[in-house]
Length: 155
Figure 1 (cartoon, rainbow, N blue to C red):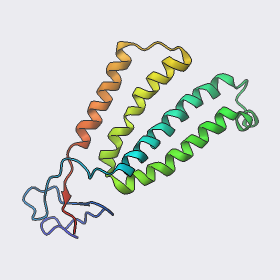
Figure 2 (cartoon, rainbow, N blue to C red):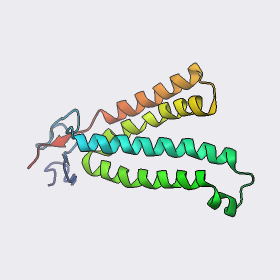
Figure 3 (cartoon, rainbow, N blue to C red):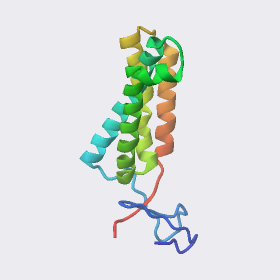
């Protein structure tokens, strides 16, 4: 489908994005993506795998004696972190088949909150008000960016 006014093509597998010109005949606002329970499961798994990879990566850095290729490849924490990142990459692609990137990426900003919790609970790192405010500002910024997208009604 092409916009008559701007002639830009906007196509996604489940949602067809419209032209951003308000006067365009295919312009329509839909504030949220279609709610899909499997999509939210994928979002949760993606968030879980990425958060776990960062936490396990911290443990890997603490347990390795010297940073050589052999030590990295033989460290079970590094291997687990790489595995989590691999699963995250796969699940993230499934998320993007269901939701627009701007919608899905807001949920990935929760990684900052998870990292604060992991660092405190597992590594006894202090959480300051600055850490909390910084995470909140990042999430607010991503939310503001993700709120404005337009979709065309399904064919």
